[in-house]
Image (cartoon, rainbow, N blue to C red):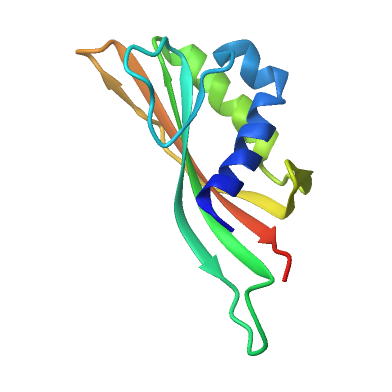
Length: 135
């Protein structure tokens, strides 16, 4: 499993959820954000991949940690976005963009921060994704 493959699954779930796209449109980015991107937006990053070791071959299950960061010009928009993302991802089971997801579980969430220079609120959520792999 590559970061790009799990990224396609995360993008597919978030971009397919009207509760998310009603807020950010198509501004859902992997790893970094284009310069001068309009707020609000979402950034997702794989922070850890742990394979399940076996004696007879490659890992049939990877446990992947993904960080989802949200940025908006006002606190209410960001908290609404955080709720929409959690409703979309937490406890998801199924196949998306060819990836067999056993389960997504929210690990933690921050209350975020405010950058006065940019006038932007920030929130972060971490998710654990149990991904079934082809052997």
